[in-house]
Image: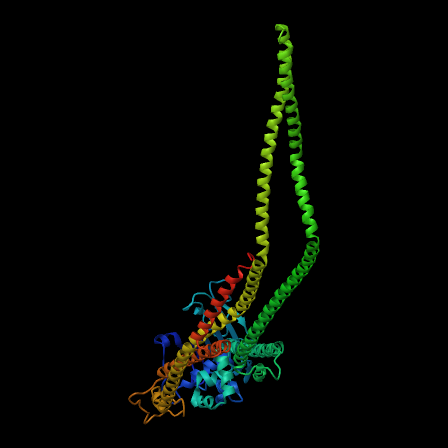
Length: 636
C-alpha cells in the first residue's frame, strides 16, 4: 500500500481544509510527522484509518462518532470530510468519507442530521468508461494528477467499500491499527499477543496462505510417504519371511540362527536391516546350493559310473555268453574235426584231381594216338618200301597223300601237347595259391590266438577312459564352485580394504560434523550472549524499543570485540548441515561396503586367496588330465 494524497476538512483539530501530498513527502523514501502535543499528528493517522475503514482507532472512537470527529473550530456550514488517494494491489483508488453531522436548517431555526456518506473511485487509463461524478466537495481539477486517466465510480455502499478495502489490504481495522499505525505504544500489545494471534495476523499481512498450502501439501506427502514406506516395509518383511520359508530353514539348519529382523513397518533402518539379513541369508542359501550342487554332481557322477559299470557288466555277460556258446561250438567242432579234416583232405584231392583229370585224359588220348601214329608211320614206311619198290610215280603220289593225312594227325597231337603244357602251368599256379592261402590261414590263426590279450588291453583302456570321463564330470562340478569361492575371496579382500577406508572416511566425516556442530553451538551461544547489543543497534532516540516499548534509551548495549552476527551464525549452521549430510553419506557408504563384505565373507569363508587359488589350479589340472584321458574312449 502507498499513500499519495490526503485531504481533510473539519476533521479533528483542523477547522479548514488541509491537503497532504505524501508523494512529495516520501520522495526520499522516508518522512517524519513532528510537532508539539495537540498539533494534530495523531489526527492525520486517524484520518487515514477513517478513510480506509470508516472509523478511527479504538481509544479515540466515541459513542457519537460524528461529534467526536468533527472539528470544534469549523464553520457551522462546513461538512466534515476525509478524502484519501492511494495505490494498493496495483490499483489507484480514491476513498471519500463523510460522517453523520448536524447542520443548521436552511429554513427556520434549529438543526437537521445528515447521514454518513462514502464514495470509492478508481483511476483507469484513458477516458473509456470514466465517470467524472464525485463526492461532495470534489475538486474539478482532480482528473489531472500523477497518473494519466479518469476516475470511475465503483461503489457508494459503506459495506461494499469496507469489504473491498479489507480484501485488498488483507487486514481488518484492528490489525491495521495494531501493525501499520502503531499508535501510542500499542505495538507492545502486538508483541505480547500469543503466537497463534500473531501468526494469523502476519499470515494475512504477508499472504502466507500459499506457504500454508505448501506446508499442508508437504505434510500430506510426508504422511503418504510414511504410509508408502510402512507398506513397503510390510511387503519387505513379508518377502523376508517368504525367503525364510522358501529356504526351508529349520531348527537344525544354520539359517535358523538368524531370523528376519523383528521390527514394525516404518521403523528406522528396517530396510537396511532386512537387506543385510537378506544378504546373509542369500549367502547361506548360495552355500547350501553349492553343497547341494556338488552333492548332485557327485551323485550324477556316481550314477554315470554305475551306469558305465552296468554297461560293462552287461557287455561282459554278453561276451561271456558268446564265449560259452563259442566254446560249445568249438567242442562240438573238435569232436568232428578228424572226420572233417579227412573229408577236407579228400575233397581237396578230389578238387585237384578234378582239375588235372581232363588234362591227364587228354594226355593219355594224345599219347595213345601218338603211339598209333608212330606205328602207322612205321607200317606205312614198311609198306612203302615194299609196295612201291617196283611202282613208279603214281604209286608215290598216293603214298604222299596218305603221308599228308598222317601229318595232319600229328599236328593235332602237337596241339594236344601244347594244351597239356598249359594245364601243367595252371596246376602250378593253383599250387602256389594254395600255399598262399595256407600262409594267410596261419596268420589269421596267429591273430586269433593273440586277440584275447588285445581285447583285454583295449577293455582296460575303455575302463580307464570311462573312469576318467566320470572323474572329469565330477571335477567340472567342483571347478565352478571353487572358482566362485575364489572370486568371492578376492572380492572379500578388496572389500576389506575398502571397508577400512570407508570406516576412516566415516569417522573423519563424523569428527568434522561434530566439530562443525560444536562450532555452530558456540557461535550461537556467543550471539545470544551479545543479542542485546544487536537489538540496541536498531534503537533510535524517541522511538519505542521493540522489546520493552520505552522511548528513552539511556545506556544501550554496545557490540564487543569478536561480536557474532546473524550471517556468521547462519554460515556456521550451513557448514554444520553440509558436514552432517557428508557424515550421513559416508556412514551409508560404509554400511553398504560392510553389507557387501558380509555377503562376500559368507560366500568365501575365511580361506586365504592363495590357498583357494592353489586348490582351483589343482582341480583345473586334474580336470584337464582326466578330460585328455577320456578323449581316447571312442578310439578304444
